[in-house]
Image (cartoon, rainbow, N blue to C red):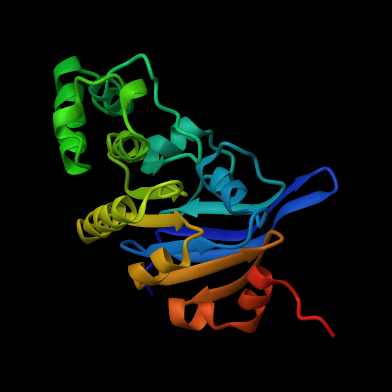
Length: 241
């Protein structure tokens, strides 16, 4: 049997009496595209933070390529091949778009010229090739979202985690980002996406994992998951007696 690329086992995070992530267990294989959905407060971003090391676990393990990385800091996981975006843009607004992408590239490309070439390549990939000279603070929301993706790609990541990267975009911009994510997936990236827009989830036509109150309540195709009574209840609330 092929070893999973990423295995989450019993992943748990408590903040005092609040259990934000509760015994989440699933595997990702190389080349997977998984959408993580659930109501607000379901624990989706907290789970991302446990996977990428921004938060320490209360219980459970994170295993990547057979190595237990549960205790490793974010920078070590980035070196192993994790790249991510954040709900709130982390771009350095006083730097240019190119310089922002170079920040990610420096992790593995210490030479200035090599980092610049890598940054230029990923900006071209995300549709910002002509915007490298523009200060990040002058970009549109859609462009800032693309810059976040570019910064993650500049790490030479193998697993890309996208946290609500389409939030606040109009329908045309959403369609463009869907096309970009599909392209990156076809190019071989393993991708995990937190998404609220169920139309986007359907558009990916791939595996969906659902969290509710920190627990994983469904795992399957969009058709299976979005017709599951537990998922419908989580999104729409309990039926009145």
